[in-house]
Image 1 (cartoon, rainbow, N blue to C red):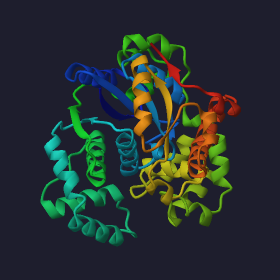
Image 2 (cartoon, rainbow, N blue to C red; image 1 turned 90 degrees about the vertical axis):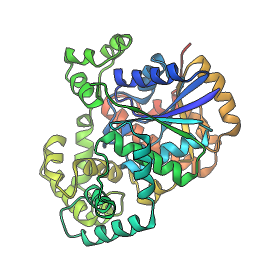
Image 3 (tube, rainbow, N blue to C red; image 1 turned 45 degrees about the vertical axis):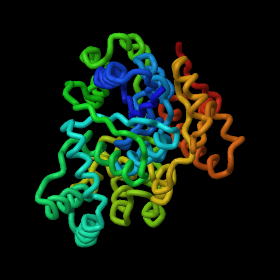
Image 4 (spheres, rainbow, N blue to C red; image 1 turned 135 degrees about the vertical axis):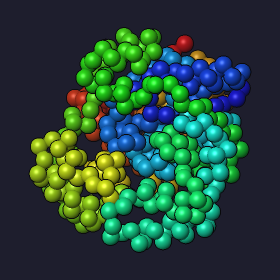
Length: 381
């Protein structure tokens, strides 16, 4: 049995995700698909559209065999930390392959870029540009791309999936992992952002993005939005101290002061984000910084690898395979949340941070925070 990992969000699960799982099942025999999926706060810095167990259930309904959590704060971090944590978990559970989508579909090109950006020459040039750009409006990602084009006379392939693909490969190289990377070219018109847009507005167009088997599932589950937690977020930031905020990941003194003043002058999150984001402080950075401030995430927390993962859902095949995975896993695989108390203190502390993220999500959705530790994985035939 080969284990193929996919680092995912399923926010929400759409036809493009189903096509990726079908691609694996059709091209590789005797395979177990393990999705390593973001928890309740996702990579672009917002609350997930649905609670993590429900998104995991949808994935297993559509062919995934095991869904493990990519816990907070890694789930809500820049591409490098997000990909690095996901790859670390995949490697730790003994995955044989890692499948990811890319706009270019050219594994050789992506690998070349990944390897070059790990070279000392590139790292030194990027550091020079970052140091020189501290007092400018240029964003980190812009400097990252500029360093590459200056050194190699080529451009890094554009596209959100290409960016993550390069980070997955960088992480595999850095770990000296035995995992074999696979990329499938993204050609379908389906996107998570469009699906979320229609889903949150209750518009029938969402059904053109969803697998038919999930129509009833999504129709019967109300979507969540970060706006549901707006009062908590704005109150916290408006009453914060700028020196304290500047200690957290993605936040410097300038952004800390900006977050506080914009929170004090905004009536809702849409207004807040439109005021806070700039060319230097991009919208996604601001969004992630907000959650880092609320939940107390410092940079060193992101730089350390994840100590555990949580089982969210599995098929019957997944349950059988998980027994074998657990025998050799280098990270704790928690089956039921309440079981965290039996683990060592470092794992407990990491788990409780993710629980704080879940508590914010539950506050937004009106669920009882006490139910977080009562959850159980969804097991389907």
